Image: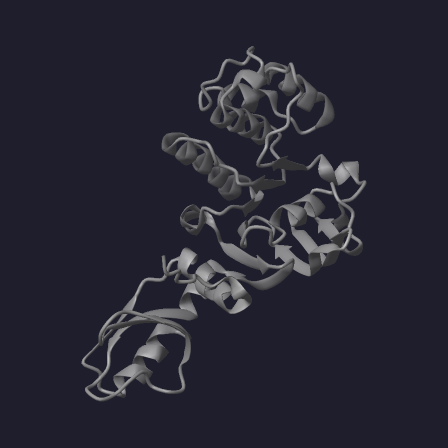
Length: 298
């Protein structure tokens, strides 16, 4: 199921939370939606889930409008940052509720997943810890066998073993059933391991949207000691420079092989390309949007 936002604008009073936001999550992909605090990730997700109605533009799932469309919503599942449950409900109570509301609920799978989530099914969920509530949410959502699963800070509160368990189950569904997964998270190291595609938003607009491998291929991290009496060559699209003395670390827009060829033409004392993480791409892309890391003298 493909998920899309087309030119979505949303205002809350004088504040414009989304400004003509375009986003496309391919069917069967794991898509990471990232941005600084307040950039609009949660608002975007609430449009994708049909909770909010756009002031302008449209939100689509499988090519159909999501807002006030129960048929489409029954094929989707959402795990928000703060998990919803009825005040006195147990996991079994929520299971019965989901079973009534979602035709695709798989009771057999629910029972099988009990082995992955060691929870007391009869205890009120309100007595669970934050991490246990997240486990219950995943247990129920995965039992729906949704075509699209939308996650907002999904593994926050889970211990490392359970995080690995959850990602294993999610990626299994992507591989075997073609489930579409949209993840909004600030844990970029974790997203780097699972995402096919990344969207970075800033101030309610899409800054860039690309495959993760394409992102990593088109920004280079270079260590450089220039030749005596020389500096950084002109003609490079340098996004950031750091380092003390002659050894500099450069973040350069461009493919590593091409950047290295340009630098080697200057006969440097030393030059090498280093791996670039999603977190570094995020930081340096946002640097041009007024979100650079500032040095504060204390």
